[in-house]
Image 1 (cartoon, rainbow, N blue to C red):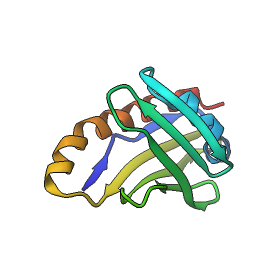
Image 2: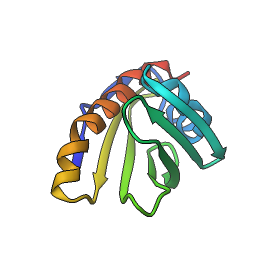
Image 3: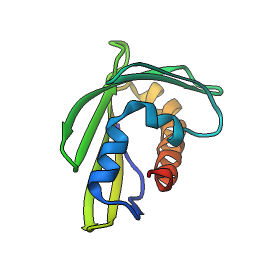
Image 4: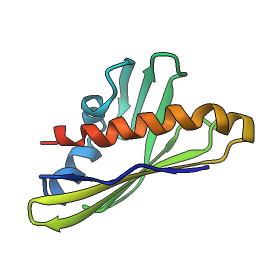
Length: 131
């Protein structure tokens, strides 16, 4: 299953965006208001839960300086990646794109597509909070 949300233009340099997002503590700022739990395990791993959804542990798996971050599920029960692409528009403006790729059976895919899409839209909308 592949999900992308509309790219977000923000008034920050790619370096600022990248540095903010590489610090997993900062993801709490981007989370939806219905967040029920947020806990950082280490510099690469955090756990979050949203009301009505199971808790998810994400681990930073890949990063390309100032342009890309990939987070994956830390649980072997789930197989997915959340990719954040950062493109420079000018020295103080970036375009940030979020995409989700997961391997799920058809039933599970139908159940999670809506909540995952809404979660990603909220993350994208909250990118304005990056400083």
